[in-house]
Image: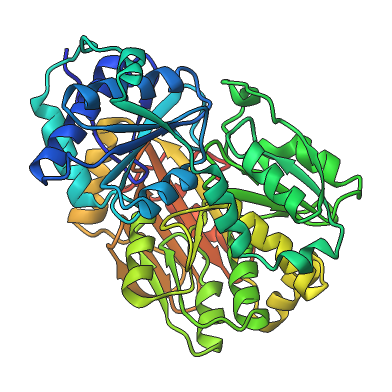
Length: 482
């Protein structure tokens, strides 16, 4: 039976063996080929890469076979590649498309395909919508007659590597001599993902002493999702608390997100990373430019931007919106509370490796620790307390909630006066006391995402109590709720 293929905020993702099958992967590849033919771009090579997930290499070869069957040349990256490195290839080689087989930070049972378009950017909605339409017209597909290795022998598939160019581009963004003088001790955790070699080479060039954990291949990711959340980094936190490192760095499965630990072994949240790097770029590197964040990311970024006379923008969840706004307004930094960020002048999407290297430079240039810099920011701009909660749902619940929240525009009985309500992505309530609360549906999983930011920690429970007791919403928060 032909399955519906839907692209979310981070590409198409599905469970391996259920939705993510060779037949469906070939359908997506055929849709990509038809799209390129429609737009008269099928004469350009498509670069293909993959991560370390179960069968990712085989899936990427299946994509290559379909493209070659359609007369489209293929540049194939072997072995594995970070997503930002593939994005860099599309941009630098002026290609029309790149396809990355990865489910990024999702649990091990998932795999997916990220579509990269001209300029090395995440595919915009109009592209993914067209790919979905084309997929609906394509029946289940078997492997074409010409195999990957025969196509390789015939020169229709070319092995490609831009590793050296990508590493050089990263180091060009960093004050290498300044970092080399500091002799930093770094604990690096690639979370069984693809960043190990690139990051190790960059840190060696910076003369950092590096210890690695979770660097071997494990398609189960140590029984944890390869997302740099504190819950998934407990082994790293234990080592950091021994006090032997200046900084701890973790990258997610495909290296477009990071997590950090400070010199005391304290976990640095994604919002704190954004605050640190944007403040560093403005205050210490004296760079110009505003900031853009998605709707569930800290408003402290706005405060920092405004203090320097710079604009701050809010966009829906999905990094393509951040990239688009950065291009439109020539912004310095864009980021999201899930750990992804982009810095002007490099890859046109999330790059966890560059973000990590910039954090290392920050220590060298400021001569301050991460904890000292965070204290400096809090003293200048105040503290907002961020929280989030994910709730699973059934499809019938989604329809009901969409009608209640988005069509009927129902507003719960919150304890504070509402300044305004946004329906940019789900619904977000802005209160007059600088707090906010949002409800939105995940673009890649059957999950309802709640997020909030409050001026006092206790205010979060007030918000959750209202939601928990709301008989109209009927959300399955249970008694704990947080």
